[in-house]
View 1 (spheres, helix red, strand yellow):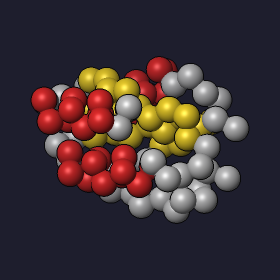
View 2 (cartoon, helix red, strand yellow):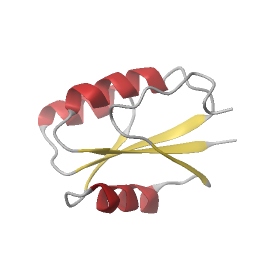
View 3 (cartoon, helix red, strand yellow):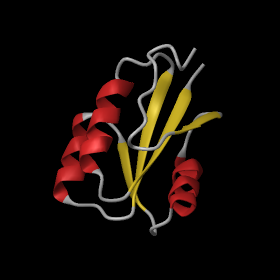
Length: 92
């Protein structure tokens, strides 16, 4: 089973960093897409560090989630807010 995680981000780089750190230990995740309303150098660096795809989308949670879903390559889509704290077994 392969999961694409889509994370909408709007000026919450710290929360996104915490979530990307947590997702490293979650089973089944094959792809992470960060859909940001504004991309800066710090967010670019963090996404590169965690091997997450970074895209820019117009502001608005639904718009950003939709943009990320269009790029996802797996049939299971998991939408997470940047401040989420998923359990390590959540992907099972």
